[in-house]
Image 1 (cartoon, rainbow, N blue to C red):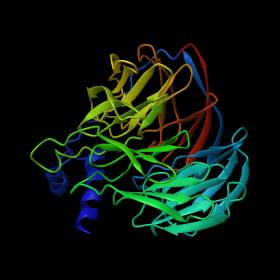
Image 2: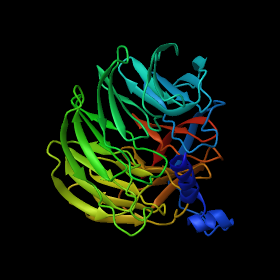
Image 3: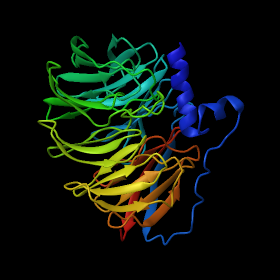
Image 4: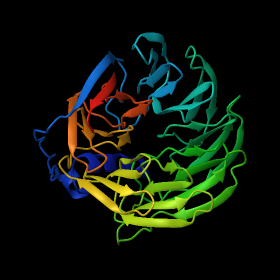
Length: 388
């Protein structure tokens, strides 16, 4: 119970007060968000359709990722509202009210979607109609989305375990236990699967591991960051932003730590940069983009780690991780604005407000379509046009 309380308090510290003393005394010393300046909007941000899903995060610090399967986009809300929309028109295909409180999702594998709930279960669901296929009880709740291959779904739980389950029926194949430090921020990064063979996961200890998807065998483990400082809070190096796999290079960023580029096969370190991030990263064919803990956006060259630019005009606006299209870098903020940046120099080139309760989930990009899922449950499909 004590640890759970601490985890909840740390959410408040991240979003509001700057120290634990500030929280208990009622003092708010948080630096105010940077006011938005007028920009030269050369990129048109056009909303193609919008739906009030009636779902959302229910003011909980959870990231519910939309899942895109074929022509459907599927979203879930905190109270179990699950809806599939036509991704091109926004028309409702099916709706389902799950009798559960959702904590993580929506994850996918071929032919299934997955969510986690407050009963510490992972739930497999048919994307064609919302029917529950199976449930599997785990050791703790999951705050990240499960990830699946053809045969195995991988689920990370809050107590530091990683489970490999058969997608067919939820049978446990393996479990990897990394444990958790004394203190950790509430929230976990999602794992990623490479080539249906390896799963890469960042842990609250600042370690990143590569395991076999089929058997959970540890291939390698590396320290993305090393805890430093006198207090447990200073020594927190959680990996809460999702790792990124670009070709054979794995990128990982930590809180109070570093951005690292690793060889995905061997774990060999290519390069590092000192930076702290809660939100995470995005990538295009050349660069890695990181939202740091102050909501500055950085661009690094993938090969060398060279700093290419920094955009600080959105500082302290609680930005999401960056997403990318062929021509743009995208982030969303606490007031529900979508911001468009040039990948060349980070200049702000477009802006439009959507869900006024803001965003925790980064824009989802597929085939140059952009989907936004806001904290109130507002789902928008967006097209961008104009000079990047």
